[in-house]
Image (cartoon, rainbow, N blue to C red; front, side, top):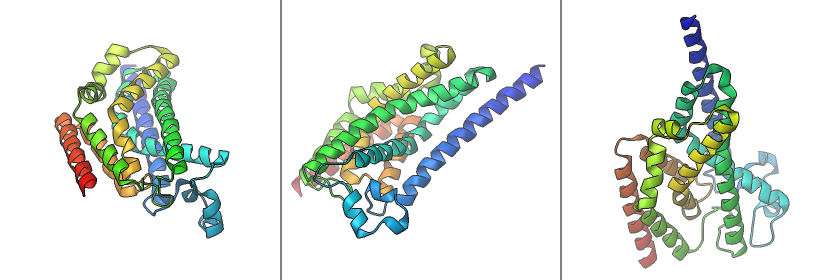
Length: 264
């Protein structure tokens, strides 16, 4: 009976691993389909035959009012991007949770993941509103999807750098770097408990990475190289034994870069 139960648990963990891998792959495949080509998020969602000049003029957010469709699509773009960027580094916590719960509680793993992604959905809504305000103020390049203001870009880099070396960042990063401690301290049974745990873990991760995600406005919201670099930085911070040193080094680099832009 024990070998059978072990086999069931192993199968459950494998299903969780495959599901996470598929979700991450789908998010990145969407980014590869439209990011890194100087395309606005609304344009990258269109079939290639529709991405012509009249359609671009209609769909790309400018300094005028956004249609509801533009807002929803931009929100979806941000959320998918957060899935692609944040889920890989959250995978160890999710998989450890899947290992900790019984096989009969498989929906709890999905609830944990959903709670985590819901928090990043709220962040995506805030980012969408920020993008709308920047576009309305004509401070966002429609094609590159990066701020056209050098002072703003410098301010974002310096602010992100200062936050990277701050005790608030360190406190949030410690929560993200210790999945076993987090799960043992905040464990709640059932799918509703899993949802709350996922949301709490997501909140810590937002606290850890929100300024790094704000740098998308400096480097380009749909700049694939910039997205990949930030994703790698987040993963190194959370997963490496010397992750805090990586965080501080990145912070100092951002401050220096921002200062160069400001005085250049």
